[in-house]
Image (cartoon, rainbow, N blue to C red; front, side, top):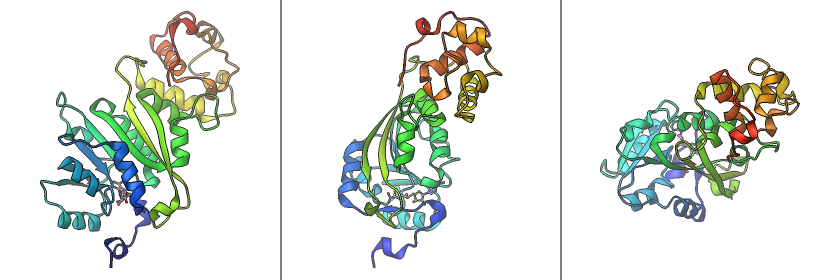
Length: 278
Ligand code: SAM
């Protein structure tokens, strides 16, 4: 009996294990692990990616919630090869892997799809400690992450992640590559933090609130969705059309609105004050 056959996949942990060797090789090739790097895998599962990553790196960190899988991994790998952080990746403090001023970490994972959005927001808070992240997610989520303004997929997830990261879709992975096969198509996405100062909100909490308000009621115009933040004179000062919907605004335009509200003063014309990001 194979290891995969003797473990019953747990739906509540989003367990769809990679079983296609070509896809596994393509993902590892895309990550390009190099010896000496601090790399953490989220959800190693039965080790499809773990094994080639350890082979390339020598040592790997992993965060896994399923105790049965953790026991298997402990049997298979020495502590010198694999450090397992037992628990919920949503609560894991990734900063413990790279204390301030001591380099950056790389993050990899075939992520549990049931927690993908909160996990991405949790990871976004560590952007300063990360050099890059390569993930497998539902294709639909990846399309939202990398979406351009004006498209149906563009929304809060696109703006808040594109604010912190440059992101690129790498390739699709069909359901047949997994055991059990999910019902949906998956994609690989790479995320790399934007250089500091490229497009910075002076108050990130305010940016989050404004973006949430702008996309809270997608069909309404900015005049309605942002009425708690901007009046008509403010839109004019920013050089923005209040009759637009939130999905038309670039990341830089959202940042300009947040910075304008944070200062509580007119900044003059938007178009001369900002440039498009993303
Ligand atoms: N990496 C393996 C592969 O590609 O075959 C398994 C991927 S499977 C889609 C997701 C993995 O994440 C499982 O091992 C699951 O137990 C683990 N997992 C689910 N929820 C988790 C959480 N909140 N924190 C950490 N790991 C989690």
